[in-house]
Image 1: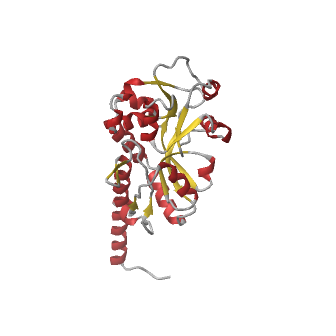
Image 2: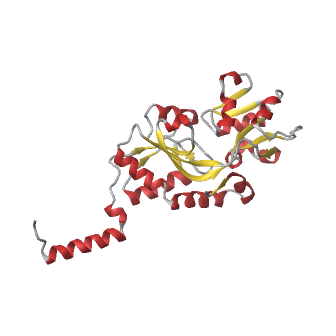
Image 3: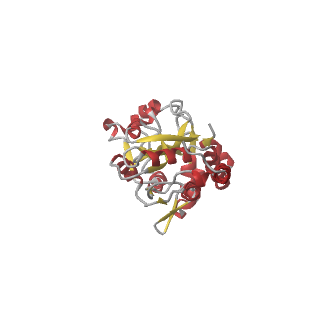
Length: 274
């Protein structure tokens, strides 16, 4: 056994103390750039001139500096995000909901609670309290964004037998314009997503005043968060990202940032901490 000199012991003690004070220096960094395809998502992900910004990309860049990770944010249509993740062409999906299909490809990291609501064009002549009740009203035309998933009840709308009833929009702007043009009557999504889309698109100006909102009994509050790929990332990188994204500060930061740009009455319908 080798004995350490007093000087070496002192240096090791100093290094240990500094490491405790500055954990980012002692922690391992990501082995490569993390690929995070994104699509416009209200104020959370804003795309300007083909580049991604907004609450989530800005937060990831900030966390990346702390944890030693660099992120790339290629902008893609919303419908492609799911395909890229399943095809092992994406390392991370942001602001995702949990689903059995995604669990096959990645590890879900919950960050906050959200709720999708029934959003329709006024007037809604008959109250709708569940997805089953919605489906029973065959005169109502339903539109959804391809790739969105809000749980088992919502997935009834995505079944092959519903193809004649359900329209698929490419993104949130397309969805809201379908409602505005009366091509569709109702949709299901977090109301903040609808509100942000309306605020950002001049063609939809004032459309929020024409919408009715109601909760559905079979679509409760659910977890929202990130998916970390099990197929594209080495275990060390997965561990770093799961630790980083699962920290208490991430959920608090996202909700605090979104609450600054979304009216409280709208925000309280959509998101909350665990």
